[in-house]
Image (tube, rainbow, N blue to C red; front, side, top):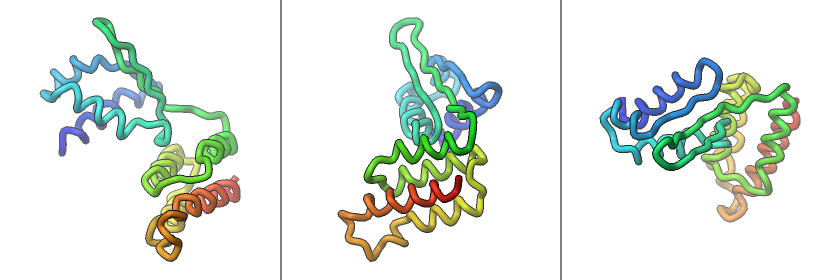
Length: 149
C-alpha cells in the first residue's frame, strides 16, 4: 500500500467514530515515517469539500488540522447543496468526486452512481467540443441529481 493510501486510511479510521478528528501533522508524520508535506498532500487531495469534508487548520506550536465529515438532515438537502455548489461548469474529476461521495453517504445507490459516472464521463461527451464539455457535464449532472430526489 502506498504511503498516501496509508495516510488516508489512518485519517478515515480516526473519522469513523463521530465524523471529526484533529490531527497533529508532525506527530502523524513521525508515526508513519513520512514528511509532513505528504500529510498535507493527502488532506488537500482526498478530504475536499467535493468529497464531503471540511478542513480547518491552526498554525503554530499547538497547531492542528481538524477534519470533519459533513452531515445533512435529508437526502433532498444533500442533493440541493451539491446542485447549488456545482455552478455552470464542472470537470470530470470533480463530478466523479461528488458522485463517489454521494454513493459513500448512501444518498445515491451503486446503480445510480454507475449511471451518473457513465453519463458525465468524457467518453460520453466526446462528441461535444472540449471547450463546452464541462458546461454540458454540469447541466447533465444537475438534472440527474434533481430527478433523483
